[in-house]
Length: 235
Image 1 (cartoon, rainbow, N blue to C red):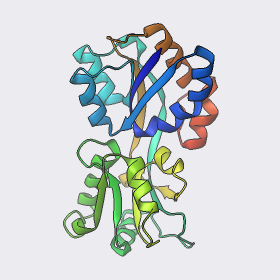
Image 2 (cartoon, rainbow, N blue to C red; image 1 turned 180 degrees about the vertical axis):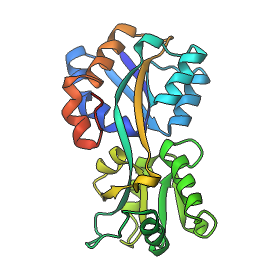
Image 3 (tube, rainbow, N blue to C red; image 1 turned 90 degrees about the horizontal axis):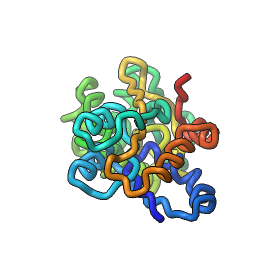
């Protein structure tokens, strides 16, 4: 038996963290795809097989409205901030990012900037807005290194031999990439906190087992994992 999960990259660490125990307990397989939330939403809309979605709250509500997921199955995993990362090889002092001006100076000093897709990923869309607000979207355009999702962006950044490069995505994607380190969140005036939310697909082939998985992902069994990788848990 298989459960198909289509998820934003911010939830990859949670699903993978409980996967082995769940598969052993229920004698099943979790088939997870983790990428930009917009791309995952599009797969659901295009009729791809799916049992469970984990996307931003806004996109899950869209799928409720379109009838693709079951409304009373919608629940939050927690809030994920957006952060700034540098390669783990970089030594302190790290660039200051406490204010918009600090961030502007830091980005200008970086030879390359690594981000997820700026059209379909939550963090990528927001980072383009930040760059526009800072007046850097044109000035630094030739330094942008964008990838389908934050996990790939962070992995690619970790492979750059220049430790002065910078990047950003959801903190949960930064924290599970061994080659990079989180140096802080976006400044208050530019912050983004995303409510990652799950829902069971209306056409799920295994709704009862999928419900068991959903309960674990939002429950006490995964709480320590979620907190460790950067989720802020809603009371």
